Length: 449
Image (cartoon, rainbow, N blue to C red; front, side, top):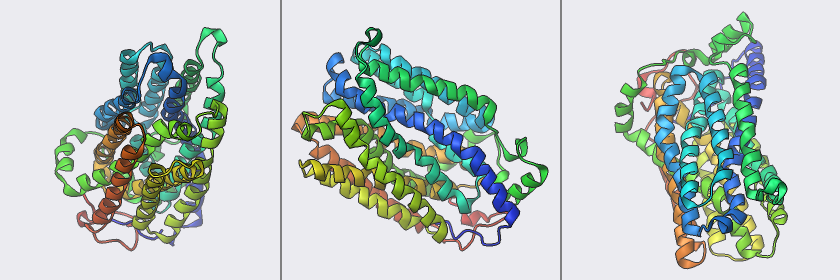
């Protein structure tokens, strides 16, 4: 299953067209992911003021954080299948428009029930965005460059954590403007830009290379030569493939391997501000935002280097396992220390390891499926894994509510990450590693599905 060393005979023309695709496709997707990530992390910052206003205890807040994950999971596979039918231009744009509306509508909640409802609708609206983009990248980016492309795309998340902390801190300070609480302004101002991006996406995104007016005929030919069989994907009949995908042990193993990463990242987004506030109770919102900008800043540097290292060496498995173990160690540091510096070090390890591993994991997971099963296959792996993202914030909240500290919940997350490392290693041994990516077709024996 492990992808191999990039093909060395890529022509200058192919290198140029790949670079042109990068410049066209990746920046817009990065901007979209910025606002997708803001929508994820603003919950944790809003909680600093919102929980008191709405009367939410840690268990109820954790449940609300998990409810969005549950509805996301429900709609994940249907969303990816719909994208394969309607195209990325329409479907990714639809996702952004509806999630932006739902995110901004969170400003209207008045209590736990309405909060649960909006979180559920938000999960439905944004379901399929990340797996949809991962699928979309297989249509445009050669396998030999995909770890770098995925890492650059996912860099938007830690970058947003850096900027989002400061931005969210400022927005929480807007209380009283137009008679609204600061946390309401936070949801409004971070939700509506996604609507605008979705409208832009309808005109900017291109479904497939052969439809790209911004590529010349020769560039399309060069790109097709690099992508080879990856341009040959089907758009219909995905539901008929689902039973086969669900019965495949390797697919389930990949899903279980992914389980720990959303658990780690969603728990960081939901609880990092409160974890820091727990040991720095006198810190203001702006100060907390500044402190929480440091871990993702380190993550940005490490991720960019880690993706290049994986593509350069062609190694994927240990480039996933090692950062997963770093993330697990980070959560354990937080669990067993009340020292602010040690907790900050733990948060840095947790977010850096989780993001670095996620980028390389999806390079492995997308290669595990032949093109005709990728829409349902990628969504299935994502859906299984995202159960962790739905459950873990709630587990952390319940543990905190019961024990009065984060220790039990954070040990749970670290344990899931150890399971992730074991499952990635186990999955890598199901198939024989390949020395090169095939340029045309691939034997069925080389694929997981």
